[in-house]
Length: 186
Image: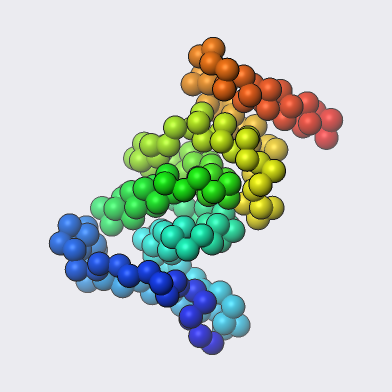
């Protein structure tokens, strides 16, 4: 089985950058992804390798892969992981594609239980991101879309930052009420 489909061909990384290399674990200049015996998917044995693959997927607009990988993110603790998380944040923040916005929300939701350093590294403006998602939700692919429960949880979690009397946040209040009504019916 070939690994050609797993990593992007059009990306060139500057692996010799001193600041980058200084944050890597001793002797880890490459990431190892063992292939499943079927040859259809690879494993990410470490959080660093998972974050690197997530970053590559963001770069190449493979948002459905990013969405499915989001739930595998755990607490970011090493300097290597923090460096990779910073890059993921930088790349994700610059994308305004509907699926990219959904992936950012999925990453925020996945890292929420860890709090501390991981949550503080998410410097996204959550109310703005939630508003953007609400406005673009009909453009979000099924693979990336949040469930009604997930979306409502994020809106409820960030309610204190939403209530500031601005017109744009009225849209989120309406969306919140709609989601609550939908979930009561179910």
